[in-house]
Amino acid sequence: MQVNDLSKTKICLEFGEDALRQPPKGSHWTAEEICQQPGLWRQMAEQFVQEKDRLHDFAAPLLALPDLRVILTGAGTSAYIGEALAPFLATQMPLVGQTVEAIATTDLVSHPHLYLHPARPTLVISFGRSGSSPESMAAIELCDALLPQCYHLLLTCNPQGSMARYGEQKADRACLWLMPEGSHDRSFAMTSSFTCMYLGVLLLFAGNYSALARAITLAERLLSDRVDEIARLAASPLSRAVFLGGGALQGIAREAALKLLELSAGAVMGVHESPLGFRHGPKSLIDRDSLVVVLCSSEPYARAYDLDMAAELERDGAASAVVRLCEENIGADGQTLLEDVWLTFPYILYCQLFAYFKALNLGISADNPCPGGQVNRVVQGVKIHPLNQYRLPGVGV
Image: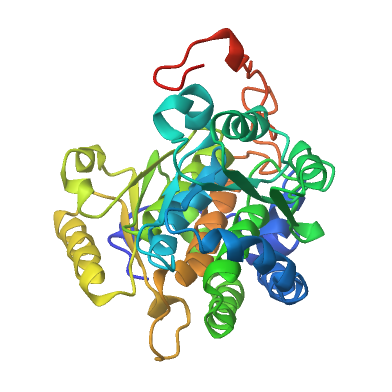
């Protein structure tokens, strides 16, 4: 990774690999859940072999519908799974008239008439770590109420959650896929749950075991060789960090920004944008207390724009550091580069580690960065308003 002017910044490296293997009090679960991910991805692949026939039996008739609409949905980090997957999955649909869209439950619940189209058969793929956030079930119920042909694929890490119970009770139009037990993060921030649910959809729609094996290898090399380097970067004084990614990597940039914001309890502002979009105003936020991480695409045409942006930022010299996160910089061995949807795994692991070490340097408990309850592990305070009390534009309700 190329870092610009980092040597000019005074760094006190208080935490490194030891703080990941033997984390301080209040950060145990976060450290464990970040590090366990390569092993969980292997479990996911093994589980998929056992579940494949059941999942394909559910999906195959729907994928034969010429006008099928697929909606990927969740809230917060779970929504970003869909954002990262949608551009790629749209290219994997077997029929020309089929579409894939990422729409957060937080948008579906408040504005269902803008997003739900009754004329089209719809497969709603829902992501939920707990499966019990208020918007998760409200979105499912709205889809059932407003879409005559609605089917659900439910990916959740919690067998006791509302989403899991729905899947068990509505087997005629819903398919429940429970993630491995260890994916149900006990810490505040979603880490293992994010990557496992993301991987589940990739395996179902575009399974590539050799690509997964290489992604796991890269992640393990990162954990074995790069931890102290990431900790050193996190120890530098920062007020904001910008994560730039395009295409499938834009959703990953957004998730990386949220992880940093969450684990630093808002002390470090996380920002995301596409490399080309960054010049259109957001670049003005860069100052000497800013870090920029460019998530470089493996696709040569897109990568050229990523590298142009990184080079421009390095020439400007305005940021504290510029990191080019590229496959060849995290242990690649010269083979053909992975597609971006598989690079997601080592890339988000890098960003999770950075956020973890930044929390430690700020003296914040990574497992519970907001003990005052301003935000919660499972969102609270949402009032779901009954649909039948309101007339929605254009849907006859």
